[in-house]
Image 1 (cartoon, rainbow, N blue to C red):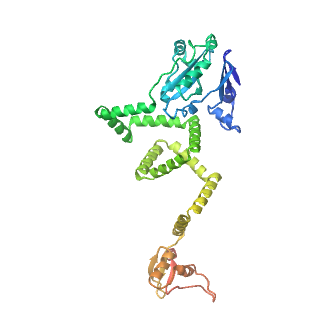
Image 2 (cartoon, one colour; image 1 turned 45 degrees about the vertical axis):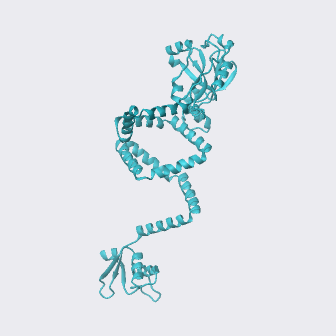
Image 3 (cartoon, rainbow, N blue to C red; image 1 turned 90 degrees about the vertical axis):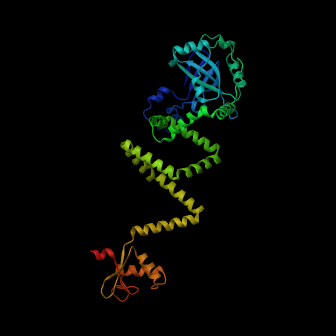
Amino acid sequence: MITKFNENISIWQEFNPIELSMDKDSLHSSDPARTMAKLGFNKQRISIKDRWFDIIHPSELVRKRDKKDGYYRVIYVQLNTATGEYYIGKANRPKWSELKRYQGSGLKFKSKFNKSKEDFARYFIAVCNTAEETEALEASIVDEELLSDEYCLNLIAGGGGTTNRPTLAETREKKRQHMLNNPDQYKPMLEGSKKAFQSGDSPQLRARSKRIKETMSDDKYREMSRERIINWKEENPVEYAEARRKNRQKIKTPEVQAKRKESFKMWVEENPEEYKVWQEKLVKSRTSKKANDKRKQSLKEFNKNNPLAAHANAQKRAKAAAAKTSKAISMLDLETGEVLKEFPSAHAAARWLVEIGKAKNTNCVSSINGVCLKRPCTNGGYRKKAYGYGWRFTVQLEV
């Protein structure tokens, strides 16, 4: 849909915001673009004198910092959606926080903006590599013809000159050198910061953690973060693999394990209802067909690539299963029926027979089990002894 604000400014949106707000199925749609639009990523374009520009979403813009000097160089439009008035400007800022705070410097615009901030919406329409590029692009948009428009809040044509500011790296190095040259001035501040963030618990840290959790729990932020991580993984596979490796190593350290355990315990105590919901979701996710198929495929690949480790794991599982299902065995005197020795399992009894030279190998376990289970013999009856002793499951003697 296209919304025309005046003769020079129009905005196109892929989906009608009113229709999206009335959509009953809020986040489940067969159209991925529509789902993203519901999450706040509705594609937009803006026309300035019939010249169309893609509107850059802040979640995308934040990643477009210049790699050489760290600056954000952009062209933006400030549009009063109530009156149709607009202002077109440029910004060259070293930090994202500075770019967000900066709204524009035009005198006429600032006067209007300060009176009705809630009516203005800012649209970023271009990212440039150098300050000179921003000057040239602004000059090509804000010309004398545009200035004659009664809705235009610009007072002069674009391209008013560049400012050669130090790069972000130069600024950081300057601050670093100043701190190194004046350690006494910064020592109390550094010690205070370390104490606050290493204390483990404080009102300041709790408030900070709460703000972070609230932000990260928002569906819009989750989708934005997921998309950013996927893009970074695709662009930097080697760095991603190394980051994963380091993260796995750090998580396994005793200090981190203890900290996570304590943090989780505190969260469970403070949020019992949320913990119950989380448990249900966890069980459901782990027992789903998708999760089971993923585990099987992962185990198959691991066994193929690590045959020795796979064999060792299989033996561990077999021993664990045997220990879980094994029964205690008692060795009896054939004449008196007296219990001579007790073993935790038939395998343990078999190993003892091998150690004292009564049996050649642990295959004798089948004979011991045969006596305990009273397996029938070929000549009738059942086995009553093995290797000179009677054998019974200990639980049978206790009955």
